[in-house]
Image 1: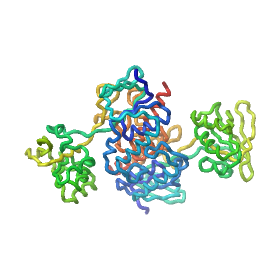
Image 2: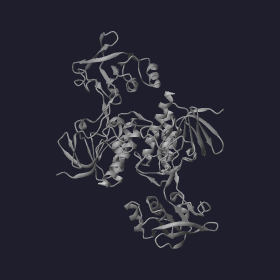
Image 3: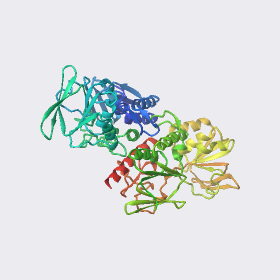
Length: 309
Length: 309
């Protein structure tokens, strides 16, 4: 039988790492499971609003967080994907996609978010073959190419800004009648004179042979269907919480956005011993500094829960 | 008539500074009023649990926070003590002890906490003449002296540990029947063999001429009154939120500990436009990383409030 940990933390972003640091300082026996230590923060070009660091790349900040965590005796398993979470009497059993199993007296879910997909034909087929969800990561691959960004919000405009030094032609496709990005981002994009904005346009299908060659979209006003000839498609239509492994468990309540509902004072879910923190929850503001604070709360609450047992 | 700021932040600790950084990034016209940029964090010897900094002195961390804030166009007035806060129609008027007045559309109260006093004869008279509330600041002044720490909780034991390299003899006075400090601190103190712990002892009076010469206390079990001959008295009996200027205003609700009750999702108080964050509120965990997160929430909520106006 596997060892039982005091606390298992799912997720290696700011919330999970902060929880690990605090849990370790309370001398808990901790296992932290994570796909990687990148997440949304690691894919951010520049972080200028995490207090204490005037300007730091997202990947450097994640590096510092990880180094801080590793100072403490927390067992870390990287490259793990969680498939299931069940509670058996007072112990939680976590099942991994590789069929591994771990037991914990308490669990903190801090899995963060993942990009929302277009769910159109060709998207899965051409993922990493021209379809990207991370402009910071992939913009340099599109030097002198024609690209389209799907999504006219902040993320879409920021992706266009990331692409400006590389791509030859950039379009932004927005499904609504107007863009909703910040003034400042809009001005940067307009100032470049090199970004075409296509409103009321719905992406329908991604075309190509080995790599992306075009995006078919419909003008929602005229009904007309057109094809944009592009080699790159950046999907920037929001994100979803990483909660699949909880969907059928009945252990937590979800809000309308599919986020885990927590007590904002403690990170507690509706199941005793199960906590959640950061962008995967219904916390109102999805910010690094907020996720850190919520991770700390969840760890201290988990410690209190274990003390009471 | 004075200018009206979009947002006035009261307090220059982790919560106030985080709020300032986020408010400035939303292009708000901000005034930050603070007594100083020290507070409880600045008086902490080592901070090992603010994610991103493996080990940093509290004063260095406050220095980094302040430097980060100063990168943005936030007007800062240091050395200011707030005396009153009133709401006149939709605008807040802040009165200072020096009779200055400032107007703001929104206010974030993030004044932190201050040491709880013994409230016994001699305490005020001998403050800074042997009576101290900050072991980090003042321990070196008591080289080869006899000192007493009043309070047998974590803070009291940490003060005793700070004093070990300096003081000749150290007593800890605890009013209860047992000490309540962490195992680890207790072991350090016991290991030194130089700290005497006096239980069930209530401080009654501080004696001296120009400087402290002794502490009179009563043994609560026997009723006996004794005098400890000491040159230093470190008071470590907890802290109180800095909220005097709000006491008569009726603008906020207080909990039983005198802390400002806030909506934990937004930092909102019961008065529209008035927010609070950090250790001055009923936030459950008083931690630097938590205060940062709550400060960010308050700033983003204040911004939303101003947008709606």
